[in-house]
Length: 608
Image (cartoon, rainbow, N blue to C red; front, top):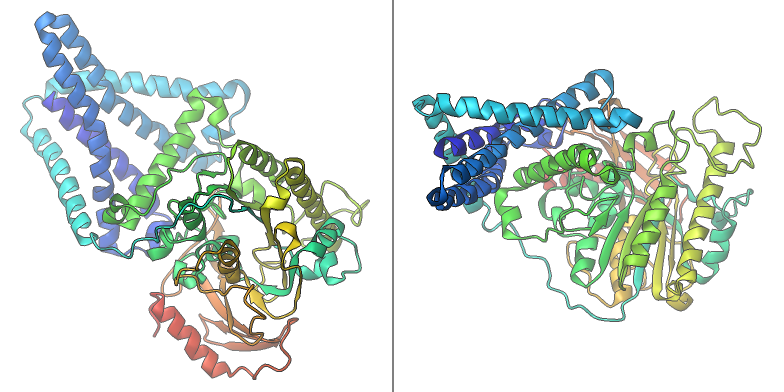
């Protein structure tokens, strides 16, 4: 059994090492980790996996020793079963490596097979598992007296646990604990619903010449409407992460995937706070680009995009493993479950393809129907209160495939960002929004729900265009129109104010229920570097090179003026935008430059 334990340790580390090599040799969350930090990640991640793999061996070993008194046959069966532990680990590793290769070279993975082809990965898995099981039997005889093997296995075991223990000691005081909040019955449900890349000036709320959002216009009559709302990020990932964490993109570290949240933003965020208030939380968005678990918001959502992420609170094990190591563990677990579970449980296959949802040539449904269906199931299964974050993709460019063709009827979409097709997509969103509201009404939940409508960025990924921002409170409370400039960072503190909860200090925005906001305050947004994007075979991703990584520029809005700093060149651009605040003081570009560079330095960027 000792040799089998050594073989299991080698199998575990081989699996971790292969996964680590996959991520460290391509743009990934490890790109922004120091060289020393990268080297520690596989050792840190191996320790809990080793403990989990050796546990069944220990049980089978004790069982074999106990059953040895009844005869050699029972003991032999236990040992044969124990050989399955390293065999299954090696089979999973090999299957993952094969799947990675076929996806990268041929664009064909296990998830893309249809019909009888779906049986191929399962047969391959069975063949690999049987082959490695037989292989372990022959190798156990060879390594029984091999000092080199025993020394290697012991070294892997010791280094993994020593490094993990050292990391735990180094991170024993990683940061402040989240607030402990009381569960109070009777709080309203919360629905945070967004449409990707939706400009305010293309909606009926702003007096657009086309009646693209008739339902929203009627709904807004009993709502608090902000006519000049702006995002804090140009990408969906940066904007939604900023909105949910209450921090600016440079602070969270999320500009464009493969960026992931870092620092306190990992575990201090709006959904986690609401969970601690007793809310059941669900997210219905798009994997990779707007999925909180993929973006490393730990303990955020009980249910997210057809799966149930482990509801990890900010506990000692997470901090003490170190954020890169802990995220790497969750990433490995997710990759294994997504590749292996569908082999045995077809219904476990992911129903949404992030790339198809955002790629111009694959836009027929954008997955919005699936998102709404899953939302409705979540609400029906939830006890109150619930918090649901929904992000619909029908208005995402570059091209659009609206379900109903009115303005684009009889036309061909030969170019990107065609107005007629975009307007039809906006009208489609209005119909989806009406479907959601009517569902709430049919369940008797509308008057017990705070409904918030937002967009993540402007059409063509801008941050200087006005976005719709609408709050509808139970009973139509606070209804009216606000013309002063606001930002998506204000959503979380406004929501908490409505719940009677004091906003924690890590939220950068302000409550919009406390009088008129200052129209001249500085609103900061981040833009990603489009020249750094490439398609990796599955996703659009960035090449986060230092010193700015995926970040291209930062903008400051005050009143009707915007100043943008282009980081690679250092150039400043001042522009007039459609906003409020005619009486605001003139922005001094040099003062803006100093402010933005100080903001970057405080966020961990190396500013020269």
